[in-house]
Length: 398
Image 1 (tube, rainbow, N blue to C red):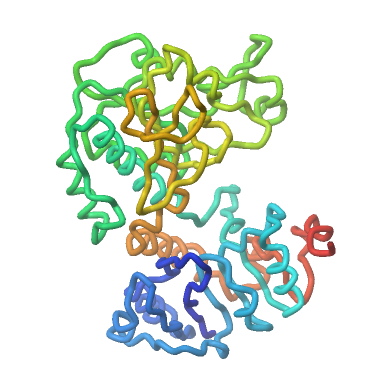
Image 2 (cartoon, one colour):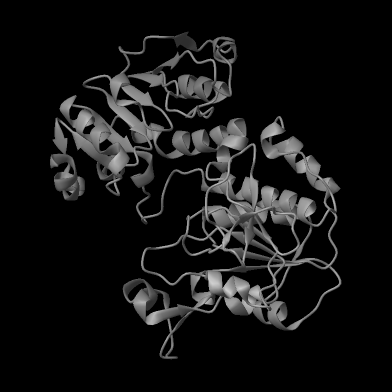
């Protein structure tokens, strides 16, 4: 079996890669039946010579490979017929901008295995960059707070050589008695806490957070049922919330009254209540001055996130009075960090983390066409949609 590592060619350029040079070497050592060829790239976070130095073949033409690993969508004109591809196709939610991509893959008899739907037997996702989105998003939140309050200045994550250097920058952080609120307890939320915990910030309970004052910084990590309640006041549970979200309202404001820095790492499902609205932000007791929106749902559950920001310009201000963008340093403005491709700031570290999960959970089964994990993530094969993705029939037919 011959594996090809794709050059990322979607614009804007993405420096990440499915496997690092060292990981490629491990695969070759552990699986004698596998060959690896890396498509040459001048933008990848690992240079071509880093692969060749470890005996990994680097070439331009990978058309003789059987299975091709990428990260972002492959431009449809670059697709190779009759191959197996693995990448984030962004088609399973009927994303209009990738309709033609999916149609092209079907017409080229491509087997498309989407990272997003590779799942363990318990239904949890195998792959994703959420952890590093959280790690970097929390760092950017601290960077934003330092600038907003003129307390300290951190080197932007994307200018750091690696995660180690980024974490060394945290030694510059100066905090007193700030309260950090973190939403989400999945991969993103866990990543956020990895950064928060490096500062030795104490975790407190909901009751302590809402009722106590501290002379040191603290954080609270809450999940969806901690900030949603039934409109009728009846007892609530997660299953009921998922099935009847229209019967719920947000209770987030009780936290906003006590929070300095809000780091959003939650998953937001369509139809659920917004965490807070623009009207909420105008209230005199809305205390949040920095929002680090790792989830980055635009004009949605976090009302201050009115657009995504860019890696090299990660912060903008939200003016509650005008409900528009303004200078984040203005006293009346909330500083918003809403970079929507955070893992790209540390492409080597995030790629290595991603590759480890691929090696542990996907490489051992990739050649088994009857494996339920692979079958469950295969969108199209043999010139047609698979049974699991038959719901996309209308999408590709129009």
